[in-house]
Length: 187
Image: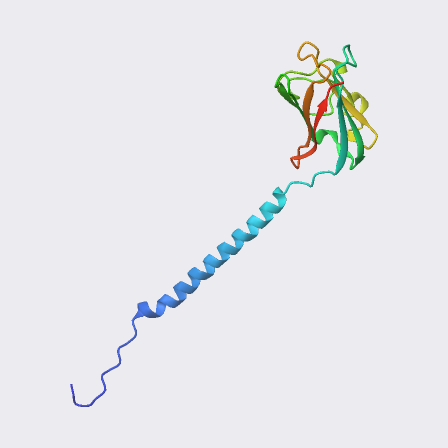
């Protein structure tokens, strides 16, 4: 076959020509899936974002005075800042001397029950156990500057003595932010 005639051209293989469209389709489908995932994740995270914490100044004090209904009361005063929705709050108290710790939530309420408490059973379950803006009988469910709230430590469960220290936190549950994180000394 050296007669000088050019060799016949080989016809292209069908598999060589079909590879380009298949690869293109796979890349476009992959890009579409990736883009859809990014959009879904962005929308999902946007809706899962917690609301911002209110900015507020609260003061806390603990009374070691004996006697019902005013003795052994943990009082809070809203000194300024945003209005608080009491249903969004939790109160955490830990007594240094005994190590007893409890968390209250489910405000406003008329009286404290097991549904309101986690941890040690420290609080008065009578109608005198809760007062002010946390008490369903005395609140519009909004805690504004100048208003007070209190919970009573049940005598017999824990006898608060003058000089006792307690760590007190008020938590805004939707954001998880601590609005108050103080140590109070009973007087």
